[in-house]
Length: 257
Image (cartoon, rainbow, N blue to C red; front, top):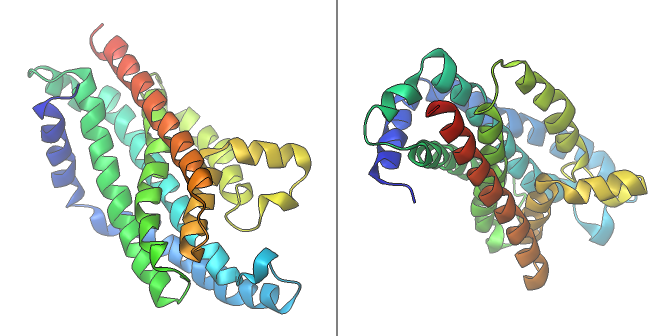
């Protein structure tokens, strides 16, 4: 179990974040807002004039919760890739912390606490924009923030484990190009995955992003089903738990060798 050192690391990351929060807000909030404005209000008008989406859902209401969760994925992944490898290899912050009574599990827990803070604040800011756009059809839309948090951690934990094993940062570019971007485009954020070929549709259902997007969209539209919601939450929680265990193992092997 994580100890008090986890909170110390969280506070250290929070203090550092105060110096660059403005630049990080561009990627985690402004960029998805521009997507929402560009695609929800322009492309959305064309979609709504045509056959439209199943159930008569407006494209803006369909798109907004998906973008909120996809932004959580990007924020969590960004905070768990280069910063983690840097703390291990380049600035050796984690070595310095381990000179105290802290343990590797505390490093992982403190890092994930910080990621949770970043994802939650970004998602809350995006939710306010979503409401300003009139893109929510149910009061349950407020629950999209904890869904974004869970989805973000489902990516942060395994990417932290990955960063804990790497010697070079080239793999992060491959992760972005070959996994995150395809997931962003084809996991239900912009159109129903039922429109994909059967093979790709099955792949989309296996991604944690699709589960987060589907659950957030159901909440925003006021159409959640208890059984389906539990399935989404359980699948995302499985990624969080497995990723956390792998990250703790990677940190222990690398930093205590």
